[in-house]
Each structure stands twice: as structure tokens, then as C-alpha cells.
Image (cartoon, rainbow, N blue to C red):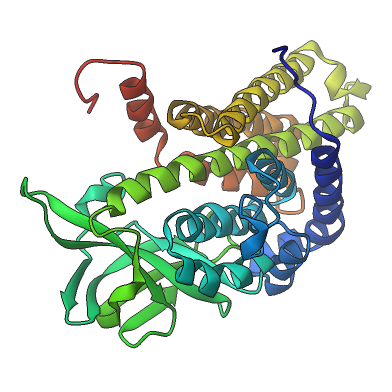
Length: 389
């Protein structure tokens, strides 16, 4: 079968629609929201109105079922304008909706997915803890089965979409016992926001994604029905790894879209800014910067879209997902660094959106598995001996 690099007509229409929304509705308020560290309920609901939540979810549960490539295009186009709104969308889908859709039972899906896919509610994924970041298996949060209830104790940190008025449920990874080999048994449990013993605290003072919602979660003798177990007991670690495989695609899309936005800002500025009597883009040293940026963006897009295609074909994509996440996030750094350089002193001022791009990039090297962890994942996939740790 011949290779086909063309997007479908529907995918092209989606890109045009999301780009128009991002430019007309997000761009005018992005800096103000960033300055105020303000989560936008309006923009989140608008993304729901446009069908951007649940793109890989069956229509039976309120999703649009347009597929992963379309989902990634949407995240890419939002990130081209603003990382915070892209983070809300990406986490809402990959970390909020996906675990419930792929591992939930029929009752759980019917209860949560329609509102999540409509943008009327948000779900979060409680994984990271103060002492369990890259080593996610070191979770200390516990869930003990007492009669008909799980009783949770512990805490989570850096959890996106977890403390807004729209945040309705958190998929919490917890230790539920010991396996036969002595290792912790890890399970995922759905904990509705507002459950007694479940408290949240919004995190402020962030350098990045300042208009997205990030929270600390605390569980103190928090009781939820045993039916809130997601999938089978003991499957939590596998569920988490699979969830992150999909989540890495959305982080990669944020890197790709952010880089595209930074490149366009740099190209525009280099065409308008004059020094020594001519536009600075006409100097070879700057023209070569722009040429390198465009080349890296094109390479990143091909890699990411291939990974998404593999996902849609239900073929293994863990290696490609890790590669795309690592390359797109690090490529964004290289691109935005040169874009700020082209802006000179103006690139350091908040009135120029390139400054926000420069800050927002950094989280992509860290979130959903650091670049170092991605290299470990890739090394294992390509057959490097040992555990590469």
C-alpha cells in the first residue's frame, strides 16, 4: 500500500476550526489569564462545545470518535497559541477521560463520560506524589478494603484539572496490598471530588501553564464504594503505563504546536524588525536559524503523526510515543530558544507572546515522564541490555 501523508478532509476542517477558535477566542485573553493565574471556565466549556473532549470516545458515551490524529491536531493548534489551554484539553482527554473509557465498566462509563466529553466536567489522574515522581511505582497512597468500601489515605501533587469547580472525579493510583512476589499491589480507584476525607488545594506561583489548574490532593480516611475500583484489582500500574503512552502523544502535540507558534512569531518578527538598514531575517545567521527551526518542526510532525497512526491502527506504539514525546518537547526548547534570540530584548517582555512560549516549554521536558525516563523507555524497546537505569 502506498504511503499517504495527506490529512483527510475532516481533519483539515478540524484544524481550520480549532485554529480559528484559538486565534479569535484564546489569543486575546491568554496573557491576562497567565498574569492572573486564572483557569478559564469559559474557554474550557467552549472547547467542549467544539467537540474537543472525547475525540477517541465512542458516540455511545458522548464522544465524537474522530480518532487520535484528529485529537492531536486539536491539541497542536491550541498549543500554537497557548500552552495553558492546551494543557487543560490534553489532560482532560488523555489523563481524565481515557482511563475511564478504556478500563471502566459500563456503569462507570455511563456515569462519568457524557459530562466529561461535553466539557461540562473534568476528571484528573492522581499519580504523582511528593516522593513518587519518575518512580511512579513508589506510591505511598494506600487504599484498604473494609467491607464494602475502599478507605484511602495519602496525598498527590501536581495534578492537572483537579481543583476547579468543574473537577468531578479523580482516578487515584493507590497501593491496595502486596503481590505474591512481595511487591506492592497497585490499583486505580475513582474518587469523586467532594467525597468526605478528600480535600484539594490549588497550586499557585507556577512558572509554566499559569492559566491551567494544578492541585495538591489529600486523602484522610476517605471512603468510596468498592465498586469504584477501575478495572481489576492489581491492574493499576499497567493502567497507568498505558495511560501515559497515550498521554505522551498529547504532550508531544503540545511541543509540536508550541514550536510552530514560536516559529511563526519569530518569522514575523524577523521580517519586520530592521537593523543596519534591513530586516534582520535577511542576515544569513538569522535565516539559517529559521531554516533549522522549520526543518525540526517538520521532522517532529512526521514522527508524532506516525505514532498516532500506529495508535489508531491498534498496533504497538509505546516506543514511538516515547520518541515523539522526547523529541517534540526538546525540539520545542531549541526552537523557542532561537525565537527569543531573534526577538532580542523584546523577547524577554510579557507584551510579546514569545516570552510565554519560552516559559511554557519547560514543563514538556518533565511532565508525563521526563526526557530521561523517555530515553529509558526507548532503550528498553530497542533492546539495550539490562534495565538502562
